[in-house]
Image 1 (tube, rainbow, N blue to C red):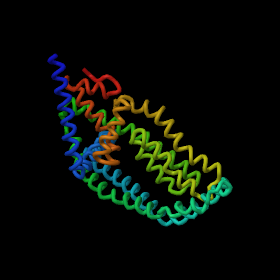
Image 2: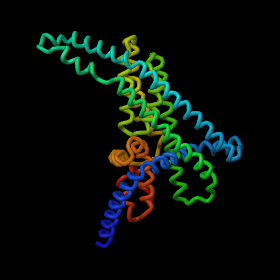
Image 3: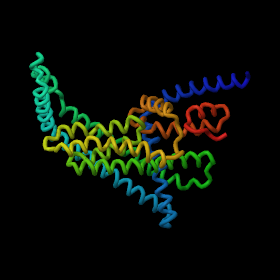
Image 4: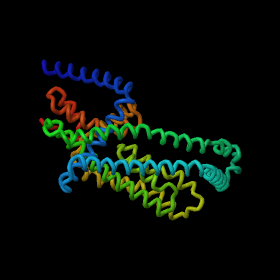
Length: 335
């Protein structure tokens, strides 16, 4: 009876703590979000620093500097790709509007809607007034606004990368957390990079505009469980369907290849590669996506899985919170 009361008290305290922490994290999102994102980036990059120290015999400081330079080059290339693609989208907006109107007229003509008493002009008029160019410009401004966030994250990463390699005597729990998170980040980054590269190459082979941008989008969204792959697979569809000079075979390949690659890698490759790095029930992942998405928006969704995995690992080390960890985890926790 006493144990049951203690568990009820513990669960109540956990719920209250989650509510209070959620309010604080939401109010201080502008401070916490870049730092948390930088921590995960630093943990992933620290593995690259360790490889240079171990196999190339580089001093730690030199390994950190080379890793930062490589990261800066990659960020610069990604930013250049996004800016260039956004400018091309804005300049091509009128072409897509014309192609959309043409496709609508062709569709209504094939369906012969006039024979069933429907005025095709009345149907096409609202669709013709869609603010495609405005939507593209808004998307471009949102992407460009991420530059300030990226700069802040990179500054945090510089500090953390110089700090992390010097932690010689780490607690066992911290070592296990960093090992789990690092394994997850390395495996997920490798599979996401391979997936994004394959999708970009396939779309480029089919001569789809913005092929590399869709590959970069696939790489980023593959970190978001469930919804991310669906969004990334469907994202190229408007450009593909509105490409006037695209052949039927190329259209079919470019439409269905991204979804097929996501399915194969997500269901057969990633489970073997990720292994036990993050152990969460599917329902727990869904609730984590909702919770962190409400708190921190799209970036919260991106970080939901590793953050919840860390919290589950922490909960598994306390006898009072261990039942919660076992409920959330996909496999039994230690103890």
